[in-house]
View 1 (cartoon, rainbow, N blue to C red):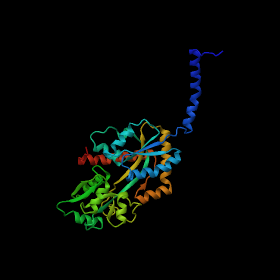
View 2: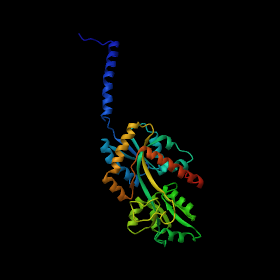
View 3: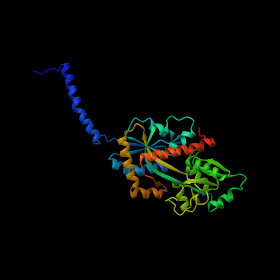
View 4: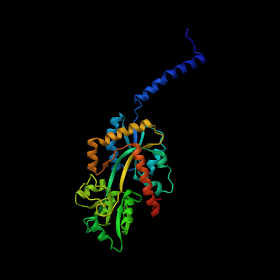
Length: 330
């Protein structure tokens, strides 16, 4: 005769089942059985420098983590669309974000209102790389070094036009710093990205540009653009023979674009630790270093604490310049 379970029996079985399943679920998490892909969000379009860097690093990181990493591009609004998406993400432990100069240092001062707070909503994992900025001039500009450029630029009554990939970019703000330090009449001509800016520079439509090494290296190596100096405090590994602007008389000048890896703030400390270990391992590998340097990008591995300190200094430094100049993009 079949026994029909009573409500009390069913309740007891449910309790036993729950008690038995709990250790299994803990074991699954500990052994990495929940191996859904990690989402790495990039605030720029596919094919650009930031996208290429992320994809290059994601592959070895994924192997270390034994978990696939999928790049998700969310371009627009100077990375604010992507940053807001990450800040609101509930996928703790499975969301990464390329936090860069714009997101973490410039945007808090450039925009009146943001739907996220970079300092509050995004936690550092570690620095990824820096993109040295190089002063280049159009083919028609008769200067082969910084001293000659100053001598040519100072007497020009209409000023000197300079291109940038957009208002508020590292290229734009670093050139404003250059204008402040030299007293030159530099006229900003913003573009929608580096590619059209470079094309007009090559065509003598603008006079000069602080170009990032990733965008400018092929044109410099091909002799199409003349490099006058690098804006980093020390010479770059990308063009070691090129003097810095500081070496050419502009003491203490140091400016460049950079990227770091971040996560939503509520991400567990153990996840931050394992992401950092995988990131550092990738950046220290000869294969990745060689590919980054060939692109004109310098790897800068470090700890979350080092990144936090660096970002704080950069946010204060560039925020001060933005406020003093009254620069706004919204």
